Length: 174
Image 1 (tube, rainbow, N blue to C red):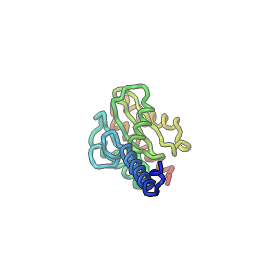
Image 2: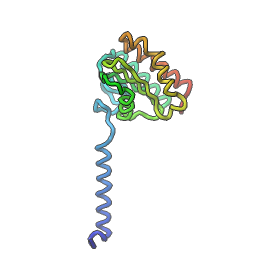
Image 3: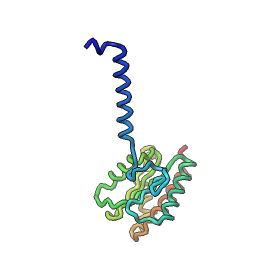
Image 4: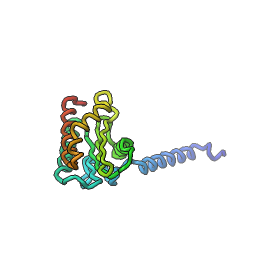
């Protein structure tokens, strides 16, 4: 045990612990479900994830362009996800997905569950005082329900994200 009392040994142990912590942190770093970081070039960029394959390429690009504008002007994004989740806990799925892709406290995520015929809008924790859960339900219903029910997922997402972008403009957060 006298060996551990030496200053050199203490420094070596400290350095090894720091290296271990860095390695552990890098191993646990968040990566989007596609394996790419949000905002990267490629099919899964700027927080648009068409995992169900139901959106037109033009719609995906419009959603990305809107997110680029929101990010540049206000530092916020509206993540858009389509999936074939098909279970009852879509709200939990949306929250987990938002965490996995690293959304901020002033961002939104909207998830369309195609096989489950459901959708969910979640606001970041920094918006709760300005935009309640009831507001999320009302916006989703008002701006998506009709198009979603008809299977027009492109229009549903474009309508909702435009309404949320307008809301951001009226409630500029920065």
